[in-house]
Image 1 (spheres, each protein chain N blue to C red):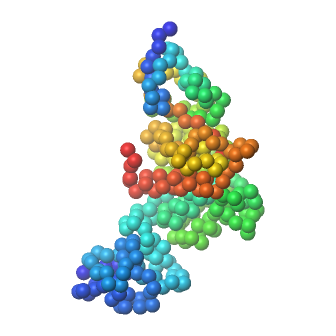
Image 2 (cartoon, rainbow over the protein chains, first blue to last red):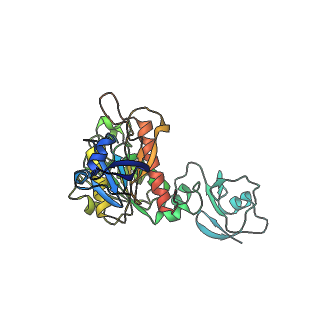
Image 3 (tube, chains in turn green, yellow):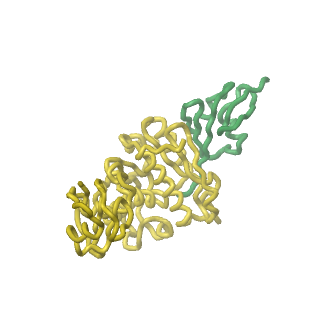
Length: 69
Length: 268
């Protein structure tokens, strides 16, 4: 499987074709954590991470929310 | 030569000084502020100067109070903020402190949303006091704000914010602060607001617990309409509490971002 190049939180990353936002979140240690993403301009809630796939050149911002306020 | 004295336009005489203006308009004043900064008696008065004369211990009402309250503001800021509005979701350590800061600065309309009441464990960091225990947070904070800056119009909603009602409660507000405690609620709210209210600017917080260094705080953007403040790591958990100093720093970073957004200042 070919790798694609993407930008995650402003940094270049490589990942296999077909990588979902959920898989990338897991790679960054955010599995099971409260998070919100923006993928190529679209806001994604946590339950949508599984259905969105990164493409060559995709820009992904992933923010983890931790409790306390 | 036109000047403003306690927000009223007046004529200045040739050679006018801070002391001569005081002598003509409010001889009993102890404090003379010109364009946001305390003046010396000998300071010359120029065309367009905004001068505030204050008698210590005196509580004026209405417009004069507003003028005195904002006497140390950067000139022009109060007028802009007075026309603006902001909404605060969650009135705990973040929300109560951020709302009070925005009220002090003169944001004209504030919407305060929370479903809870004041209880003793709130008092270590939230803007409440013992006399307010058992009171709805929305009402307690409305009273606190009215006692600081009565010119602020305060709306309250005593309601639990959910995925279903979030967009409706906050529709129409250009600046919204996410100030919840629970991580799930924070993430749900951010996603809902950013999806359903694309015109709104959302300022959230993540990672404000403990007594860790303030230097760990960062601000991160999520798209063009959202900034999140915090260290993104230190959560409220067994062994890591929520403390006034750090919660209030985060709250005031949120408030400062809100104010800068309202004033059209951009960080990029």
